[in-house]
Image 1: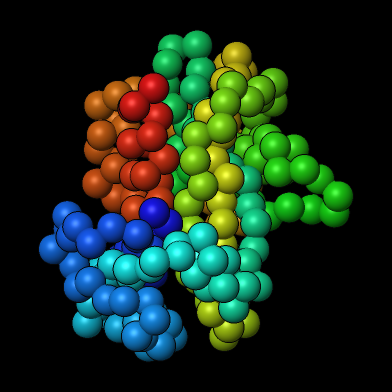
Image 2 (image 1 turned 90 degrees about the horizontal axis):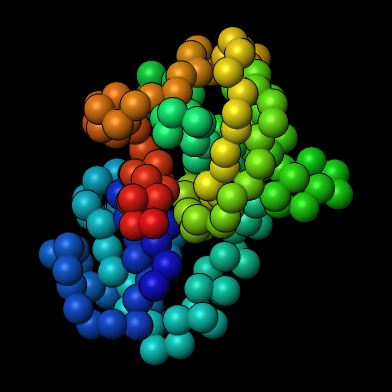
Amino acid sequence: MYKVFVNDRPIIFTSSLKNEENFSLLNVKDIVIRSVIKQVKTGKLKGVYLYSEDIENDWKQFCNQYNMIKAGGGLVCNAKEELLFIFRARKWDLPKGRIHGNEDIEETAVREVEEECGINNVIIKKFLLNTYHFYYHEKKLRLKKIYWYLMYTDYSGKLTPLLEEGIKRVKFKNPSQVKAALQNTYANVRSVLEEYYKL
């Protein structure tokens, strides 16, 4: 199964005929993908399952249509077992960003976390998952794949938001604060936290 978000609404590529979310179930062979994206974007569809008999091939063809951008990000835990969040565009988010030059994706993820939050001594503990979402860049619809890592830092200094990236605040949050933040965040972020809580 592959899930890509459009305005926080999911398009789910699946090889199963189960419909757990009560979304429309369409055969990927019978649809025009841009039309489906538009319907999900505008809310005409709250979400959709795209059934595929060859999911790996159909997903690959889908990704190839959109010049997919790769990014790395982190769910950072500190010694108090608090989780690091950033506040940008009036929502709580996790630090992430695009690959620069010849970086590998793990280097990207660590660099972006350190730059966006003003911290250091960040280490990767393990890979969590990939998330996918659409966004507009220069009026073109783009697909972004984010590689998310569980990270740790012993940093205890001042947190400094990267203002030029539109980040207003950076904060380590305790469990009750995380729960509140999840009421004002993105579906991708909730997916990352769900994966973390499975550990």
